[in-house]
Length: 61
Image (cartoon, rainbow, N blue to C red; front, side, top):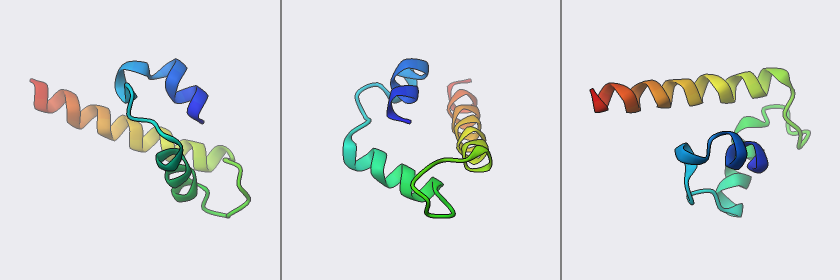
């Protein structure tokens, strides 16, 4: 997930991704506790990311 964030969303996360933050994010997303993100858990991540981007651009307008 860290690699995805850093390569695909570098301007969104900048230098704000650290190991403890990543572990917290993974823990929050991993609903079934198997230490992997399945498609449904990843879809939740995408939905939350889209919502944050929407709020960011709405505030910039």
